[in-house]
Amino acid sequence: MAQKRMWYFPMKVYQLGKIPPGTLCSSVPSLSPSIPCSLDTEDLKITEVQEEVLVGILSIISLLGSLAGGKTSDAIGRKWTIAFAAIVFQTGAAVMALAPNFRVLIVGRILAGVGIGFGVMIAPVYIAEISPAVARGSLTSFPEIFINLGILLGYVSNYAFSGLPTHISWRIMLGVGILPSVFIGFSLFVIPESPRWLVVQNRIEEARAVLLKTNESEREVEERLAEIQVAAGMSNAEKYEAKSVWREILKPSPPVRRMLIAGCGIQCFQQITGIDATVYYSPTIFKDAGIKGNTKLLAATVAVGFTKTLFILVAIFLIDKVGRKPLLYISTIGMTVCLFCLSLTLALLGKEKMGIGLAILAVCGNVAFFSVGIGPICWVLSSEVFPLRLRAQASALGAVGSRVSSGLIAMSFLSIARAITVAGTFFVFSLLSALSVAFVYTCVPETKGKSLEQIELVFQKEGEEREGEMEMGDAERLVQRE
Image 1: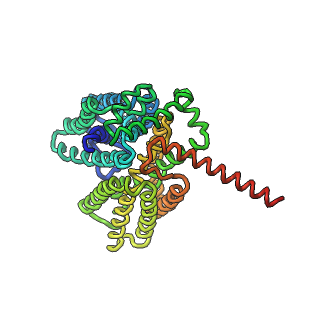
Image 2: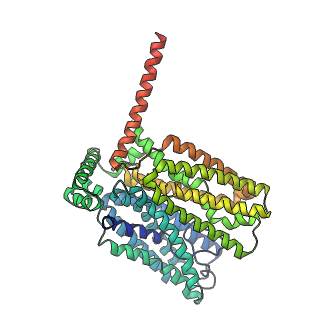
Image 3: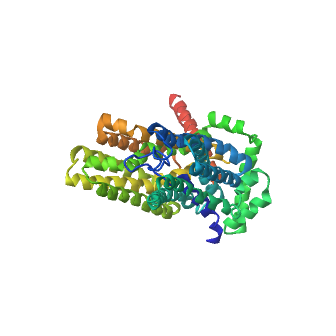
């Protein structure tokens, strides 16, 4: 079975390219992959406003890249969309590393943003479509680990190259970001195309060959292939074109509406519960709790990062055994409790010794519950709930929702904290987290062990059951009247 999964690894390594090495000074948390501390007026004469533009433009452009990635992957295939993303990102990283002035640096940053946007969109879709149902959850969760690993390597590269002269160090920091995308470029000679995209293109034998390498038996392959052909037949019958896809997304049928609510809703709840604010602004939180000294702040922040990565590994082992929905319940309920406790700790025990310990425990607990559930499962669900004809572009829409939510939370956190205090802000996050529990209960079905085509039927049957219940209710009322 290990040989059958050899293709999934390179796609996940590409996530390292999402976080190009180089970060702002530790006192300035950032929304996105950011600019090295040494990149300032000492070399390119960049002003503070220009630095903010460099940081912010990547998130904006990555949104456009994600939207374009959906249409591109339908047109040229999942595999070659990965190739395109890798080439664009390599070009952007090279342009940034060699930039002689601010204008050229912006061009490189825009190219990197496009590559990242494509990567965010295509990674979970590709992994979901090529994975066997029994392991799809854990495999699709891996990008979350590699995102965190990418961030860690960013810090490591900054530290490693910080002793070099200023005009060289930041260029190497940004240039090192080329390496992961070079790796994925070489992996394209090994990884196959998505069998589902191949079936849509009527390349049935190629799809069968891919399925034979990722499934246990020929019987299972034929069953999966038959299901995919049925789904692809529905796609072709409905004119598998970009215009019809967006028409169906904007004016969805009841089953598609439920899919959009589940897939895009889970992306938004992943962010509006404040995970990025908790991670990016953890030094601010710990200062508010009473921790003093940069060494102690760094140690507490490292503990948060370590906890986040460790519990993602736990999720990967459990997601295909326990199921998506139970882990989501554990995650959202646990986050609600931790956020509420953090709010109370900061409000009532701030600056006290006990308050410091409780604040660290609450923050680490919050990221642990996030990482064991909604963090990785968000990407799993958003890549598996949509039908084949909509999957790429609906997943892109979900990724955009995630990035917009993340940006709004990260950019407004300090302003809101000034207005209602840090404790008040986390109380609001706890209320939003409580809403996410209700969302999981009402809108998210269990998808463990089901093929992508079977999941589509789950949403259709759910609608039929609701309609049947409504009809029975109407009949009962008529009988009572008579």
